[in-house]
Length: 259
Image (cartoon, rainbow, N blue to C red; front, top):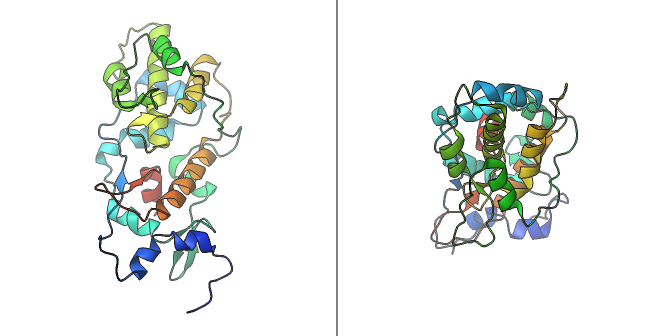
């Protein structure tokens, strides 16, 4: 057997999905990854535009608003995962290595790649109450998870998608806050379902509460790239299967358009 290249790590290689192809006794067929795609997009209200543009989120919001016409390809994305190496954070193809970069993020999504890193602060245990207070609507609590794991995206869209043209400033802020939570849930999907994680509530609140900046202060582009790398690394190590197919948690719009 050929010696393992020095760039590859034995632990990652032993747990990599590629071992399923090499095992002739593997009984279960390889499954295509499940995707946390947005079932119903959220149209951007004109009152949201100034906040989205000031923080460099408008172009990605337009991409998310057209997700209904964007068809994600689970089989194609699965084939990419099979070629991802966690050691180098690159796809290993026959013709060499390739990986998305910050420049790709900027070109495809126009998200800012300069500024303060998007590092969520410590989450307050009272965050469900805080969100309900901000939105003036009690957030639903699932019986299956206590405390709740995040804010449901469907609940946000159902209750805050429609904003009256004559809405006052406080009502508009509530709708902007709800929309930002939904957008972050699309940008950073997770394994807990159609939820936005509590750590991202901080950034939605900052965007709504603070005066509009002249330049985008947060590097949402680098956060998306990190989230994509982490999602690919986790997915490449999923070799055990249950009744459900494994889950891929990345920004599918970005990764597929990059590919």
